[in-house]
Structure formats: structure tokens, C-alpha cells
Image (cartoon, rainbow, N blue to C red; front, side, top):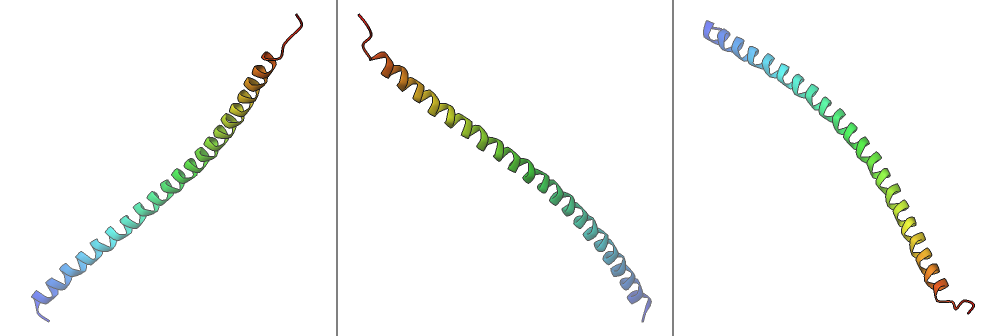
Length: 82
């Protein structure tokens, strides 16, 4: 092999080493992103449970309020003693 071929092989070898380091760095960054996504998913699922509870309480309050309003309306229409 000539010197030029050795030089080209050395350059290619250096490029491959640099690409391997870049791929390792990309994989590390992807793992960090996945960890953050898991944290976000956990937070969103907790928030979803909180919203469900809030809607359930609001629905029950609405039903109780409507029932009391009906009851007061019905009691108000009963004739009392004169």
C-alpha cells in the first residue's frame, strides 16, 4: 500500500471514530428525552385523575343543587295555614 492509501485509511478511521462518539452522544440524549417524557406522562395522568375527581364533585353538586331548588319550589307552592 502506498502512503496515500494509508493516509486515506487513517482519515476514514478518524471519521468513523468521530461518528461512533456522535452516535453514543445521540443515544444518551435520547435516553434523557425518554426519561423526561415518562415524567411528563406521569404528571399528565395524575392531572387527568384530578380533573375526573373535580368533574365528579361538580356533577354531584349540580344534582344536589337542582334537587334542593326543586324541593324549595315544591314546598313554596303548598298552601299554608291562613
